[in-house]
Image (cartoon, protein in one colour):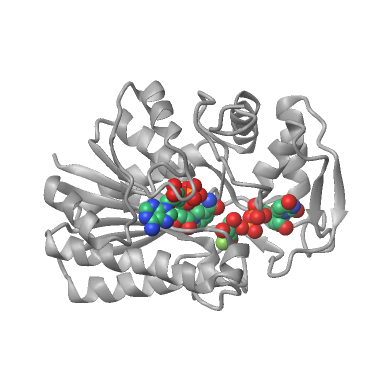
Length: 340
Ligand code: NAD
Ligand code: UFG
């Protein structure tokens, strides 16, 4: 069996997926430029799995350096996590997002073509659905209409992959549209380690819990939802990781291009998540009601029947598991991967 090339493999979702891959006997080569992750992740992966994957600090945008990886290793499949993901930063630096996210995906496809690598799993996002006309979201729902450059890069890459698949009948591509990943590995050794003040809800909650931030700002309580706060589909990152193994298995059937939502199918409001966190960890999270964040939608959750019917994958862990594991990670690593 050849290797699995994992771009962005030291990042949040990438590191959890690498652990699952190693635990299931896959040989992994990681490429990451460490623009949003730390080298220490590799030691943690080794602690969990007893194995240290090959690692190269390379930007996927550097075609010559990437070519050397394709030259050196017999690659079966690529899982492409590498990319920038901050909605806020993408509004300030749209060109950086276009060149990094779209540019690196194009280079990967060129090298896959050159070296006859046919299998690709791509990290897309629920953000491609734009403002949902209805929930739950199905894979057949229209994409586009994104309100930010980050989301638009995901739409553009999906379109590029569709074009590629049309002209390369031997290509097998799984586009995975993630909903909201939260949680951490149950060892507490790896988890989400955002730089600066977190943009996303769960790392904000855990930083309030650990005392780094005074209180949570609940962004809006007048949405058309169960309690007025925004509803999302929170999926445990370990379930998300196992979705990538299911996708690799699917690609062995040579399906051409396939698209799957990876979520739980269940919506949870901001306050429901806060209360679940408090209950799971016997803590109190102080919060204040703050203004809406521009661009946020009322409700966003997935229909995940397709992933179950075609890959036999579904999320097994629940919100309480994710709250417990996020807290284990944060409380054991109050400064993330940095030494204090
Ligand atoms: P992350 O930032 O933790 O991981 C991404 C990794 O890619 C980082 O380690 C970063 O250093 C690396 N990287 C960025 N540009 C690179 C480049 N040009 N070359 C090499 N490495 C590069 O993010 P994550 O949460 O693990 O997300 C992984 C993927 O999933 C991203 O593509 C993201 O857009 C997508 N996604 C994430 C979410 C989410 O909420 N976390 C939701 C939907 C989709
Ligand atoms: N929220 C707060 N306070 C915070 C942070 C978030 O109340 O400090 C609320 C938001 O308003 C929203 C919910 O918590 O209702 C979830 O917010 P996140 O930022 O955690 O997640 P989003 O659904 O807004 O965004 C995520 C990814 C994006 C991706 C999008 C796709 O972070 O990259 O899903 O739907 F584009």
